[in-house]
Length: 218
Image (tube, rainbow, N blue to C red; front, top):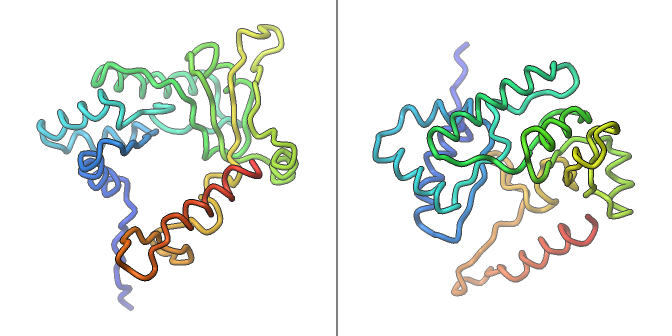
């Protein structure tokens, strides 16, 4: 039986292909990007002209690299040397190509987070902050009530304050807030209609909904 092929519109290369003209179209737009394994693969296939355009977007601050490792590594079963090596590899590419250094840790995919990671990204790599997505659901619920999703994490007792880093857990893992899930195959979210000439114009309503769900409980 032949199975029809569905094009994967959410491929990383398609995200990056559509990202560049979107940033060029409005200087107020900004985008953060993480894993160099995907970015470097895309970049090598681009023309020198587009590579230079990307460099200009990085220099202007519209495109920012955070975390910046080759991947977003696991923290439970990974040896700390491998954590260092893969982070160094990604940062080396970024430094060579754009002469910038990531300042923010972004570990939103690993399930569970170790003090070793906080220490390495804070005291050793020199990040200003670290954000992650997955924590125990009971812990997350408790922290949302107590408004303690953001903390100062001390990665080492023996090295005390030298290993402190500002850390934050997302209110909803890495999913968007309820009512704002605009994924490729999901149409449950109410679209934002910004044409004032149409009957269903709802920008202010959608803004109010977003503020209410994002900045009240977290």
